[in-house]
Length: 273
Length: 282
Image (cartoon, rainbow over all chains, first blue to last red; front, side):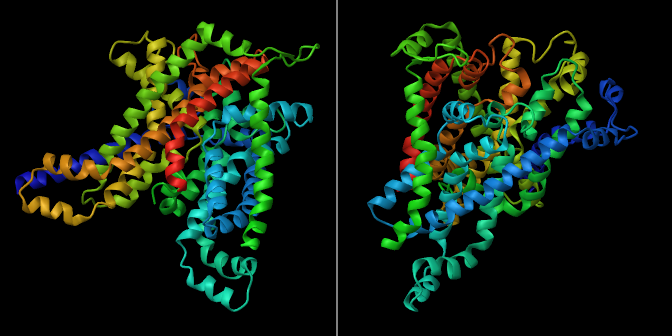
């Protein structure tokens, strides 16, 4: 009995240490966003201090972050909408098309999802350079489609395959065609899962850095690009950086509980359910 | 049947235009001698770029950094992820909340993961890099400024950010083991280690392969976290292949050679990912 309670004590302590190791770095950064430059430089660091909202005030009235924030938002929303328009019909078709054509196209779409961003970005940079689209959000949106469409299509295909087929078959027997069945039966039933997949697509676009970094310079910078640009400056303004980072983590904080169950599928492309 | 193709066709055509064309173009430009601002434009160079790359010290250094970084980050994240999954497979109050917290880093922007650790490890303001190092008497050591320590630091940050992936994969794998296996092991009087070795391990072989492949692909592509923390420095101590490619292509504007690096990266990633892609899409 003593052995057992020792084991459970050990398990709890390990779990709490693990949680602490995740929470602490994030909390420390968020705390820094409420400090002045002077307070950030104080060593030993102060846990209790007089918080200032100055960093956030400077951010939202300074223009730079606001601009990057709206760019990120516009790109991510556009990507969700476009990837749904392109992904839903293809995913539905692939979920019912169980022949060689369907399998080969599935294989191809999944391979695209695995392609390295750096290999994709070089031709896109050249194309956007000659199309004079560098530093516009259009360049970013078009390039993001290369990963967002395969991601969304694949996730929805796996999702549709798990839906019970009876309702759809009943609609087909009643004389509806495939497209009607998709809109009247499949989509309403899969709505929560489509929402989850779309949230993950949003987060993917919101977090992306390399492509946006190469395609934008000032006007169309997204939040991650702004963070990197500022973190490279010589005399780093740590509190402002902490504030921008905190703002950029908001979608993740807001959505994580909604997509918990769907996350594993999204991260492994359905290899693990 | 016909209608299914009609639903599929528009997306496939657009995706092909978005992906197939640029991929062929990448292979083509990797054979060109082409500086973006060269007024004479590109000339055909055959395998020039590849030969120059294989002979350059910068390339081999980056390849080694990529391989060392990947080996360390992948194996550490998988070991820790497995440990955590085993821990969370036990009875634990508040498990769901704790699991949500542990998964958090994987949905954060990677540049923020990098910045968080840059902030902690900085020798100017860092809680660890400045304060803690001074406490233990290493006040003059800069964690991000010394080549070996910098590599350790970026690996640490990457492991912190990516461990949730193997953790979730193993959790799902462990949950799929039929409980009756454990019960019969208990009845047979098997110890903890014995149960782990002959029941848990064989049953998580598939999740292990998935985690290994996905993490390796991700590690080969590493850019964001490292770029924010060290920009590949000091010197080239943390310069991965994508980062070398960025420098060559978008700092020196040698598009031909950057394309060659892109092709090499593509081949590396495809050779790792193909078995998985084939398995999932079957």
